[in-house]
Length: 350
Image (cartoon, rainbow, N blue to C red):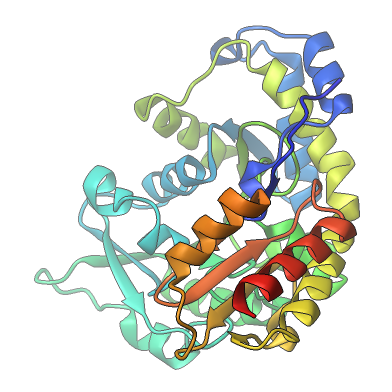
């Protein structure tokens, strides 16, 4: 049986733990040395991910951050420049890896409320051939947009950016950590989005319950080169089939139930909207991320509120920026736990 978790954790969908089905599959997984290309379960996972996302090949990596960095190092070289949103995960939350490890200069552009860069600004940001400038080589996109209420960006945005990239000889990598959430919200297959990018990484441990890992997909040649970059970063694993077994269930099964998490997020947003002292727009909640603010006249600080929830109610909530808080729904969050959080917040703020 899976371990019992008495507390209820809304901090992120990364806190999910493997299902009983995953644990059984991990215990029974056929394994080999993946560095030698001999792990059959890893190969099955990489093939499935590539098929789902409409690409030729896949590569298992340890994390979404590693997948994004491997992709950037494969697409671009030292001295090149990557155009990306100023609130993109690759710019804000990956320890500056583009610059520190890749020698790739980030070119951040402003985004709208849904995390989209302006198309005209993207065109203007692409540099000409001048020895004084870094070389524009890469555009980094994200879906869903984690910093923007988990907005699910429509395929036509990616199609438009792809047209710009093609016209100027740039590559596009998509941080698809929660791509399946975005596709679910849009009611479209992931391929509707990924057909307009050159590479994409999807996270198996964000909401899909696998304990570790992401899969990076692209052309066979891209993945061949990406395998070298993964080795450079120390990301090659040996009998990784024990992890890939959980990833297979994540892609086959867990991706099919994400609408339930979205429904729980909407239930939570509607409940929070009834509490004086909290500010939230339920209409902005499209996937499983729920952002809300403490009103300025509320005396308790966000940090103290989070601490009180944890100590007195066994509920974990995430602090974001300023007076903004974030709750994330996932497989292990049930309706009664959503109600429990709403009730607790109402009591604290009464």
